[in-house]
Image (tube, rainbow, N blue to C red):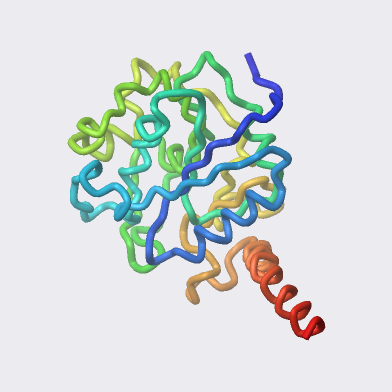
Length: 242
């Protein structure tokens, strides 16, 4: 059963945070807040803030600092309600409440079921581009937290990356619901003629010089300008007052 918008309901979003891409985190956060028709709570999945909880070292095949820690979202949510996780290398072009409305209590987790086999062996900052089944499914997830109790800190700290990203912690793939493809569009991988609600710069975003002209780079720079504009406008107003 799909949920409608309930009064005073809060959308809980966790975004992966990596110091090498901190600007991406803030631009994505701004794009979510700016367009949402519902209250939004955003928390970074930051390794530094998870000391004593997330104890495993970063593996050689982990391209970001949150490759594994993302699976702590249900635990961080107290296994209550629903939460969204998304990578930081994205920009939202739509009302995130539209994604929130797709929650379906029949499922433990919901995501876009990509059929993506990367041809590259590396991506941004020469990070490894790993090939595996369900590639990119975990980059945007709606967690039905109560049904994800197997994702304890102990399990997340010891399970293999494949066990986590291929959702083997669920009873079966039937517990994985579908989300529309436009809620996790892979830039420079999928057809740029599509009109995505959430652009995922999976190979590298326009904040890196090597990807300055990637698909939808103008969307990201426009959002960054919007984010900075408020401060500039305030400065201008203060000058007028003085």
